[in-house]
Amino acid sequence: MSNNSDPLFDRYANMDFSEAKPVSAIPALAGLQAEHGGKSRVTMRMDNDVLAVFKARAELTGGSYQTLINQALRDAVQGMTLAEVVRQTIRQELHAD
Image (cartoon, rainbow, N blue to C red; front, side):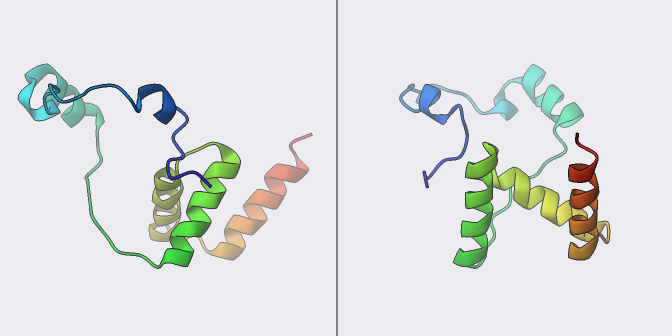
């Protein structure tokens, strides 16, 4: 498993961003971020096995583990239980044909 599940990581990994400015220093970008962002940077600790599951799922789907964690949290706050997620997934798979 790679350390970074972002498909664009390799493309930009070697670019020099040492002169880059933060979004907050560019009013037009700060305005766009405020208007469309809706996200906050947080630091949290989680169990290694839980993180490994999200990273593995992200690698299988080609997505971002952070997006998967965000969706899992969103489902939790909306009251979606694991059983409901399984039911919904099965329904989607049955009707995917």
